[in-house]
Length: 154
Image (cartoon, rainbow, N blue to C red; front, side, top):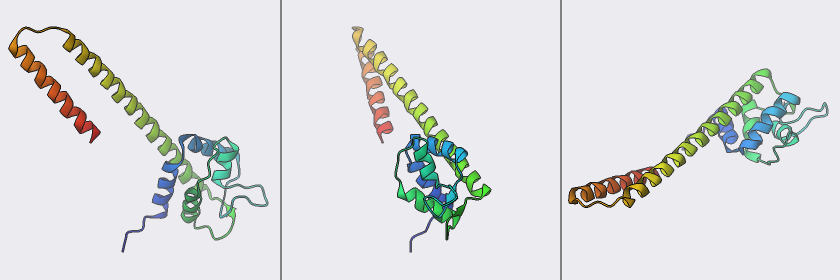
């Protein structure tokens, strides 16, 4: 039998799968709407987090988020989300956004580093060398850089 993940793990995974713009819109929507569980809308004007995001520009339909949200809240019928449920949702949205922004910063730093390596490599090969040991060192450096690139690519 397989291990079933907890409702909060499912919720976080569903949040992480949402587009970044939708996560940001959902945060805004949670702050400006009455949030409910167990339905898309209710008669009192409450909305689910996905509809709140949609109203704030996050035009995404993501059924797995709705299922994870309802499972996390143990929704049996439409009702107002509790303060605890909202705090958990907001905390996970903020953490997910922060994680993606950090990953984006890291990707930019890696791209910048690779660009610098490429320019340094180009400069190194434009200088003529007349000594055999200079040539051997240059070949060793090139092989080490290729091995590093292979490790990065995985």
